[in-house]
Length: 338
Image (tube, helix red, strand yellow):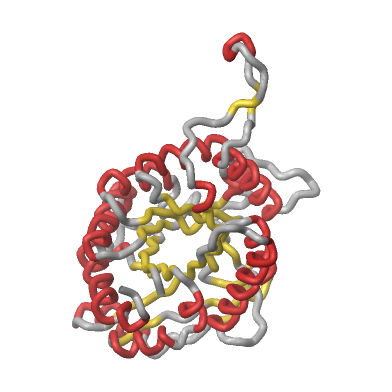
């Protein structure tokens, strides 16, 4: 394992025990946790993006705030639902955020996850044509976005203003950002497609297929397919691969009160998602040495270069910073992290 980061779902709810009763609380604490994580030596601060839900929804102001308060840690998303995005406006926002962070932005994008809204992206003005699926719409937006951040001309110039014809780029441009786009993949087929497109692989927290093998082995197979397709495509750079895991070390009475009951219920889960058989990975809950041993046997964790640790953000910055510190000190070194 070369890099570890945290991944926050950004939940907010005014209920007993929640440290994030408001959207402001969730946003401010996300920034503060990024600062704390950098101080601990953690490599990345990532956020989930959801619309029409009590979660984080507009990543770029948040990522820019993280960039302003930190100097080293990667900042990113896991993932942005591209069905909702104006790809050219997103290209401007992404480049601006990347420049503010001095090239630390890592953007996970995809078709997105199941959502609370019916036809939510259509409410944002993005209506697919009759022969286009949601996945097609997300990929089409991604294609335009990636071309724009790579410097392609996307709008015809007005010669009265520019004194010459031609196509204009969106501005600003941030060199190197095009190599730091990840596709959130939930199947082996989309992992192959991701490699063919030259994007990094962000393997999903759930796989929308089930072959009967454990989640980590199915995910490792997905990673192997991605790497083989990447090599076949002949891309010059080395790709990156991330997986996400829920890792909860039990070291205090508070940990036991919150999560002790989950230690005996940490197997894979199989179910139906949007009419499709899906496999969900297990959580790693228990004593740090036990977790380290179990993670060391996780095939996908071994094969990925980046592991994102999902955090219970509603428990607040202090709790999550201590959770991450325990992992840094007692779990990550056993997996080969520096």
